[in-house]
Image (cartoon, rainbow, N blue to C red; front, top):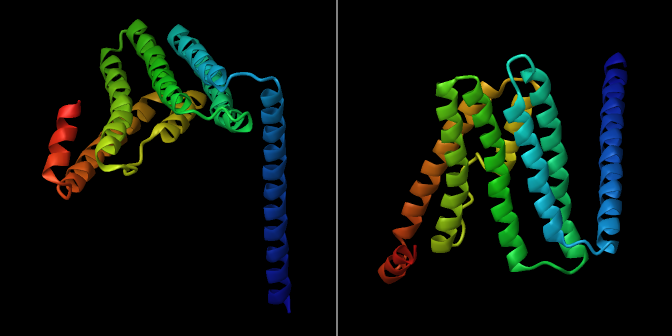
Length: 230
């Protein structure tokens, strides 16, 4: 009888937790939909929202670059909060485009280009921070991470021009952002850079290997023409 009561209690707690999280998720969804409707009614161009994301990320980069040893923890924490805020624009720009019937191929292209600049700005801020602190090794590591982040995106884009789809690999932009936010908020940026460097390199190699495998099945004329396109 006690076992049955315990099971019912656990079940009730589990249901309560699911109800709470579901309610929170619905509330966030309603809030986001309200914001999207308001932005749609304002007739703001979705590309402006995309560009605002870059502006906010540049603000985070300035906070990174302005930090010194005495203020590093506080400045990095603020930068982490700013990067979280920049995610708002990533959430709403596409939804506003759909709500206002402004979904275009250029919009997708512009979003992708701005995302690359946003990523680079964050790492550039970190590079300035390490350079000002005479930490040459981490200047090199940050530069490598910046290049690796760009190569993760480039290898996918180039591969998809050849084989249609290349979604293999782990370290894409959302994962990088989460890691950078964690590193900033908890002042653990050095190990985060190592993780991004290693996993980004593995992702690039994985995509190269995957694309090589897929192109072996392509007609020789298609592969040759695609190879000369770059």
